[in-house]
Image (cartoon, rainbow, N blue to C red; front, side, top):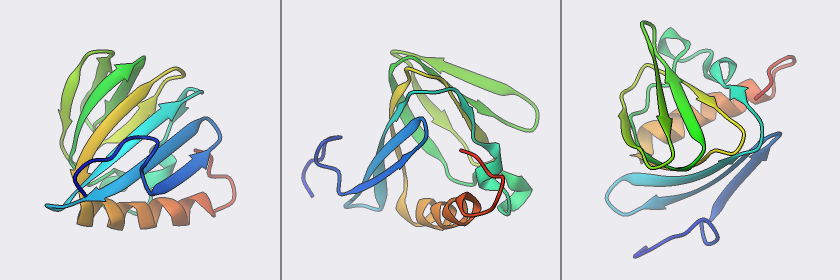
Length: 127
């Protein structure tokens, strides 16, 4: 696929306060377009992964608003105009009004999303 946009991405997941559109690209990476309309600590979605944290590396850009990632020893926040790299071993925090674009390795991302989707089906787990 030579190009993709938020509007042309083939995969779409909408949860309360979160709209995610993704496309798997040639070369083994997936692009993810995210919009957030509510604040959210998404840590519960990663239960069952090593250390109950996302094990996928992310390279991203904050289009608007801000986003953050929590690690075992720190929290990092990125605001509109920031490009970032987040290594494995984090949980995401999102803020209303945030719009981000991220790139992640496709294989590990799909493995992680499978766990996230299972967690969404559990009673009491809220995104």
